[in-house]
Length: 67
Image (cartoon, rainbow, N blue to C red; front, side, top):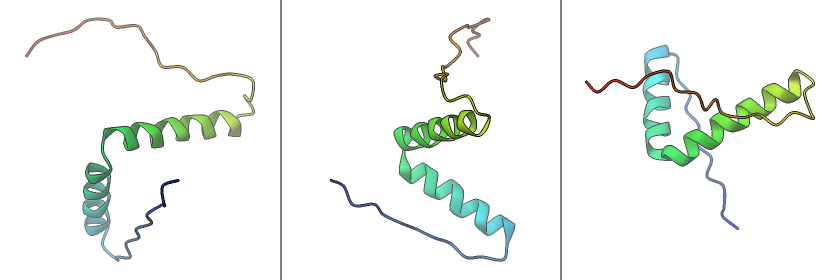
């Protein structure tokens, strides 16, 4: 079992707090960001009382542009 690593940042500046958040999530990686976002979706569904529904990603793509 992996040990959880806890980090905290105490600052009075919004800009410093924002910089900390950006660095934290970049270090965490794509999988951690996706897992955190998915957990937020699940908590939203529970909050709304939708316990029987499984949240899903939208799979429709309207168009793709190469830039």
